Each structure stands twice: as structure tokens, then as C-alpha cells.
Length: 239
Image (cartoon, rainbow, N blue to C red; front, side):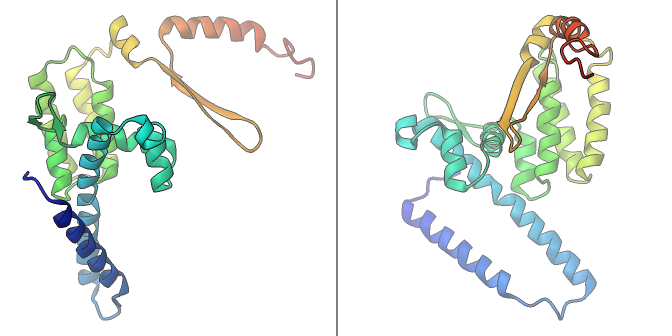
């Protein structure tokens, strides 16, 4: 990927906006059913491809812009500027790290961490649903799986994603996980890597959603506490 000047970038974004403005003003009344389906497919492909430059922009902000310049964290800055939730901003940052162009400390260009998936997205062959499945697969794949196997699995999933719906890909990904990790057992280091607890924002009624992953020990402790304190009548005589 070559270097672009500010003028080239601005010009191409202006051309993009002008092209989209023309497309949304078209009337499609004269088209046949096959033509409408073909245009929907092309529209889907280009929408997917437009995510690619966003990865590079986000990664550059992450590497070069500090909290003072952004007015806060990158996640907050994206959420406020793009009018999206912080959760969505966090998802985009994580996706950019996996699929976007990276730079080494020496300035050398590095391939995306999920190279085959990034290529499929650049070609418009896969969408957000497919990417979510693939990223989730690697988030759950045990750390002891070697690099060669990881790369082969990612290439396979990216290829299948270009032919499958996201739900079909999820089913296939579960089979691949079973092949790579048939016993389904995780060691303490793997459990420690995945453990997390997230408290959602407070809703209108004051309630907050709680989600996360507990280690077996944490679950056993929680169940013992709940068995005593959450039993009918234990803390609420009206139960």
C-alpha cells in the first residue's frame, strides 16, 4: 500500500460522497428481479469494503493520538464523534487491531493479525456477521494451539465465510474447534486469560446488566453464597 497525500485522500472521499449521492437518488422501478438482486449483492460488497479504510484510520489514531488530543480515550472519542455506543466503538477498535494494517516499532508495515479474513473483507466477500464469528473463534481457541494450525484454521474459516451465511459459519466453526480441541478441557492459564466481569450501564429503571466468565472456583464460591443468601425467605420475608 503506497503513501497518499492529503489532497488525494480528500479528493477520493469527495468522489465517494458524490457517487453515493447519485446512487441513493436513482429510481429502480424499471429493473427486473434478477437485476435488483444483483445490485443488492454489489451494494453489500461495497458496504463491506468500506470498513477497510476505517481499520487503518483507527489503528493510526490508536498509535499516534494521545488522550489529551482526543479529549479522552480512543473509545470515548470514537463514540462521541461517530455517535455510536462505547461498546460499538470498542468493537471497532478490536476489529481494527485484528484486520487492519499495523506498524512495527521500526515503522515497518505488518500484515493484519487475521490476514485471510482481512483479505476477504477487502474483496467484499464477508460481512460483519462472518467477522464476529471468526474473531470469537480465536478468542476462545486455547493459547497452546500452534501458529501454523491457527493460520490454517483462519484461512479455512475465511474461505468458508465467503460461501456461508454467518449462522452456517458459526456451526462450521464449532466443528473446527472440536477438531482442534476435542477434549474441551482448559487449563488454569487459559481460564485466567478468559475470565472477565462486565457491568452494563444503568437502565431507566435503575437496573444494570451483569455478564462475564467465572472460573470454576469463582462459580463454586458464588453458588455457595447464593445457596445461603438467595434461598426463599433468606433475605426477603415476602418470598
